[in-house]
Length: 394
Ligand SMILES: [Zn+2]
Ligand SMILES: [Zn+2]
Image 1: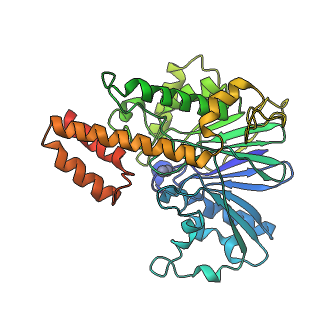
Image 2 (image 1 turned 90 degrees about the vertical axis):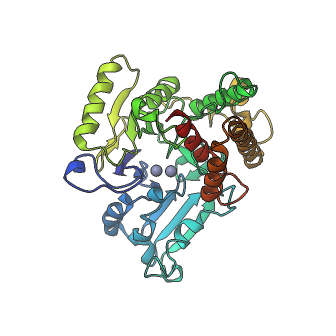
Image 3 (image 1 turned 180 degrees about the vertical axis):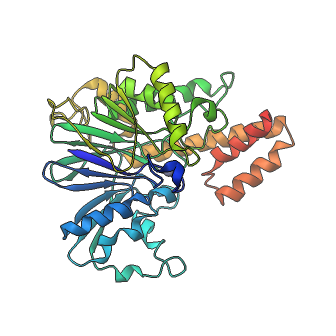
């Protein structure tokens, strides 16, 4: 298995002389199995350059896994040229958004609306299929097993683990490790911390022993102080994850849009100095670079193992593994959504309490939540809470 970065930038493309080395395209990763199966992770603007290379190997059979539907991860889909050419087969995988109930086909159909693009969906000549992925339920593509796991972000976001040819990798998409939203003196703190700890264990298990871990590392720890709740990780949180998971190589990606090649390398050098004993190799994701793994003995993959199951829908072979990921097992969607809604209810209670304590905050929190979130699903209360916190501190 080998892979190549076609887009490593977060949020918005950043072409120009300051990003020539590491690249300015948004997220896209090409994976090739030893049998040449083509798996693509995310369809940011980097997928356009990838598409140019595929024109030499028609017909194209591509499997595109979308981590989430934020713009920088889907914007290249209408420019993935193979979708216009007959005899190509493109399968696009993604989740069902629990807030909108929309499946992944919306990511393309919305962009192909009359107002936004000159070609209609009906005019696509390739055979295009859509598939819904579910947390913890592996998908087989040729010899590769792709296992999704839900990771914390302001919209449904899947991290994907790929096991193939005795090697493994994990890509987080956009990911901010779950935070405890309560203050230590709050009654709910301890209960919520147990949820945070369980989620951490689940995430570490999902990426256990991978050869390559590719992690959203948008911010430095100093920058993160003012960006909590925005849905992105830090270099340090990436190293913490990689260390816990015993990953062999850690690729920092989703480079912040204002980050120049020079500033990226300055941060990188600092990381090497501050983590001299890192158990994994630290690397900056860079557009256009082929990453080939050495073939190594197959690692014990806790998400696969033998087919002996421990319970309904459970693929685990040890009680400990099973206990750690129990919240993500069947019925996965329901359990996760219940957690999400419970979390939102707690957010709301906290916001209301803050409003009671500081009357001036209540109108802003409410208005802002409604303006951004739009209705009673409170899906952006994290953002509203961040605004409240910013006002409180500044
Ligand atoms: Zn992103
Ligand atoms: Zn995102």
